[in-house]
Amino acid sequence: MLELKNISKSFTHKKQEKQILQHISLSVDEGEFVSVIGPSGSGKTTLFQIIGGLEPVNSGEVWINGQQTTSQRGHVAYMPQQASLMPWYSVKRNIALALQVAGISKQQAQTQAQEWLQKVGLAEYADAYPHMLSGGMSQRVSFLRALLSPQTLMLLDEPFGALDALTRLHMQQWLLSIWEENRRSVLLVTHSIEEALLLSDRIIVLSSSPATILDEINVPFARPRASDLWSTPTFNELKQRIYEQLHTNN
Image (cartoon, one colour):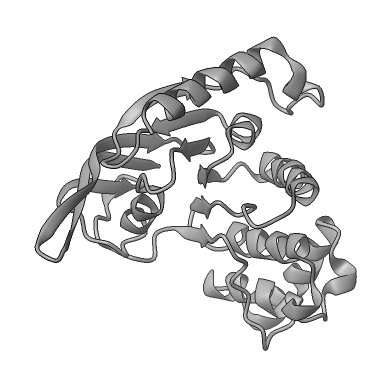
């Protein structure tokens, strides 16, 4: 699905070169949910921009679905930190656009958009406009649009970072339920250790800049995730392990 081979990236500012990513190699398998966690400024968003073809690399390669896609765009579905919905389109029209990009006719896309909004509990907002939605609702629509795009790899860039704690928890649980029905390949960037443990099959822990991979954790919890997961000894042991790595290498 996704394979990053020895990715390094630096920027030059005022004739000074700053190394951001150093020899990053990681993979996301078909239907796998992988999270990347690291300190602020460790290059996580830069890594996403490289995968999406928006930033060139100094060295290394990006492979998606067995093809080298380094510096190429259009191979991933992307969900940013803030819902990037088109304000002049209704919720249903925003969803339908993703389906039309996949080659579905306008009428069929509208029908399927309505069906999906029903599935995720937003049918009553189909004809509403983005400014009428709460933050959580906007992120649901944004995620659904990414889910229905033709690309098989989804990049989620801290999609719930701007939400309050309770809404964020509800959105995490909602995302899990939708993802487990569809099992798209996902790479998530997050600052939240709990979020990474709740959602992921594997977690990649990055050091501070220049980022290197400190650890790769296979998350041992069965799916669907148990409601008392947060209180289990293993959850808290892994949480402490990641916290200590981030704290020591910040």
